[in-house]
Image 1 (tube, one colour):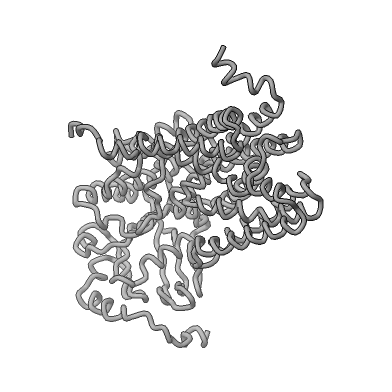
Image 2 (cartoon, rainbow over the protein chains, first blue to last red; image 1 turned 180 degrees about the vertical axis):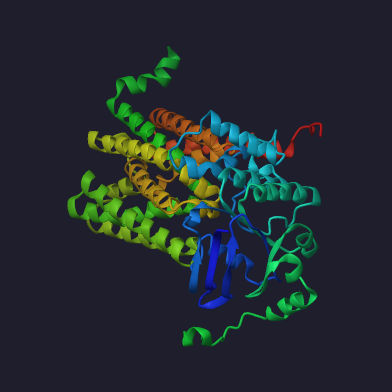
Length: 248
Length: 290
């Protein structure tokens, strides 16, 4: 099976301090992977590396020939200016950027796509609402509609179900499963261990270093989870240069 | 006929009034959309600071060749671009907060500019530089203002989509394209050329007025950026026309009159605006069915 993503001894971090250390492995095309770990485990950092927002301090991330801009990415705290005077329809339409670019028109076919995406997240009727009037859950639904339009082969979701109610997260997870069914590669950072056990075939347990990666039941064992918690110690201001790095 | 004498005749009878009107209209056309984006990017005060940053450059031009359009424009443009680029780069590359850096910077620029003008010029020159003179626009200045407005509108049309996305969701823009940064820099360049136009017509202290007041007016009437830009531009145009009339009939300085009229519209919008106006907040009316 082809790999959508390959990590080769990847170290990612800020100011030379690694937040993700020596990650090796690959994500098969079409895989649905949960990325689990305590706060500060490096989940968001890993995702920033995948979408090219953060350059690895060492090692390589291979994306099977696609550019980082072709990966759809939903960050944990989207930097959206909610007071900006724009409506739901126009914001969702941004998802067509890859096809329209800065100048391409949005014709009848594109409009149909936009309306379908809005319907798929259950926001029909909200098209003309200003984004400042949306609730947290509606906001997340709108961002999923935009992801739908991005039509990406690889989709990276950073804790997409935090701070939304059960109904919303169930609806949105249906979309994640639909993407999985369409053989898109989906990586999702998750906190809810039970939910991961029930719904994700594959899990990466991260605690700044990969603790375990593979089929979910074999990864989410009590021993591994305990180990992950212990490994996530504080950010060491006075860390020495990594020995493995020096030797290499 | 009284209405005609009051509203139309000044512009028919006096060439300087026609020029002033043409200048004010061109200025408002370019400044309306730019002002709206400045406001939405929370850069209203940045615009103000940049208007002052133009002054030392224009003043050096004045020092070298008197009240020459070309020298003052070139000096102002160079100074403005230097500041715009430095601001953009500093804000993007460092953790430094834009407002503090700019506040010190624009006070220095203003002091430097006024000092340079006072070395050679008279108080009349100083007034010209600080408050402009929309009633004394010559052909070249008028052309410059019109050309700047044209460039502004065309370039804004070209960068409109990336600029809007960059404003609403910079993270998304970064994740799909690298166009966000260039669009932001191009926008800052438009701010500078529009400020140079405003500088000639309204002077360095009031140039920002014709950008920010219409934008603030638009904010009180529209929830959608297209409508907001339209309202801002129209209110800028109306302020220009009404301000010139006020200046003509009441014999007051023309630049401040234009800004005062815009200010009156602003206060009215603040009170009666449909979107977040004060009266609307105090008396929202009965709520609708759920």
